[in-house]
Amino acid sequence: MSEKLKIAVVGLGYVGMSLAVLLARKHHVVALDIDAERIAKVNSGRSTVEDSEIAKVFAQEHLDLTGTVDPQSAYAGADFIIVAAPTNYDENTHYFDTSAVESVIQQARQFNKTALIVIKSTIPVGFTEKQKQQLDDDRITFSPEFLREGKALYDNLYPSRIIVGSKSDKARSFAELLRDASLTPDVAVLLTGTSEAEAIKLFANTYLATRISFFNELDSFSLAQGLDVKEIIEGVCLDPRVGPGYNNPSFGYGGYCLPKDTKQLLANYEDIPHQLIQAVVETNSSRKTFIADQILKIPAETIGIYRLTMKQGSDNMRSSAMHDIVNKLLAKGARVLIHEPMLQENLFPGAEIVADLSEFLDRTDLLVCNRLDRKLDGYAGLIFTRDIYGVD
Image (tube, rainbow, N blue to C red; front, side):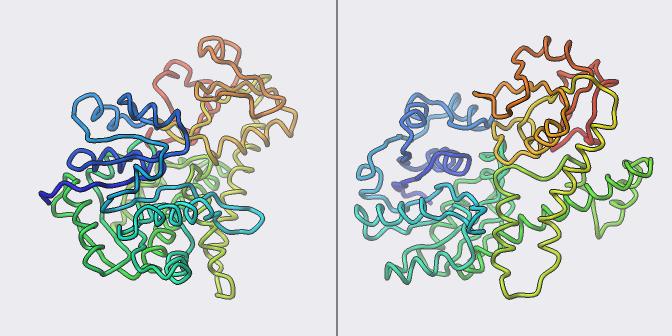
């Protein structure tokens, strides 16, 4: 794709930031966000998220990337408008809060009547079709993203697949835009129905949550029975139908995507027989309770929580399994210290935040970490973790 296009990217979280950088290597990208601090970072050549690949590209390459808080300058003349606004799961309605996405779509159309609007936010099945009908606008589609936190740009450069929920020529052009921007020219491209693309996203993430839950329950069994969990996992995964990968036990699945996506898929199952999806949602809660109980069985005056983020290389603490672990320990009266450099304020009344790592380690009798870190070398005898392979 030799023609240089103008692309508006709305929302500068992991999805929006990585896509803006990916496409700005070959096209003119205007990134729009309501957060002036994020825009200032982009315009000074810095990433809004923790991602080593994004930082490297900023340092080594010239990007045609401009950040703005002005909608008109972002949307006017854009060939594509990518929506990466947040859609948090509402525990009261049991549904994604799609108000930010709806607002962006309506605002975009005020300044641009022709661009293909591509939703990258995770949404309920049927949302895009409803928007198209309500607005009488068939130039709205959904394209699922499959990114890991801390590896978002890498996963865009080397995508596992590119899916766009439309079979129009414009949708095909968008798919080719993503493929051309990647470093994987032979990546599989799939054009589907819009609702089918939405379902692909939710089912893919729910499968991953199911696999995590399976190995976590295997680990719970092994821990309760005093068995060598690594031997069991290796034996199970030697079956090629099971295979390696995504088999490292944790305190529970978390982060921004898996908890909310599994719950949203469950909500979409209303009036449809289901047991498995419900179990995947429920087992994650029971796993965290089990882990907290195991920690409390270990004699320790002071329990040190090392990092609240879900994994290394990420700055995301949202829906981290560690949050529930800490709250469960505090509810049982445990004395808890927390070391988390990303934490701006104490979210856990009753726990003490210790910013200095050396002080934290000196004052801790038991170190609890979801994922091992080289900074903890030499403290192996004090560590409680279910991390076997040292990978996320």
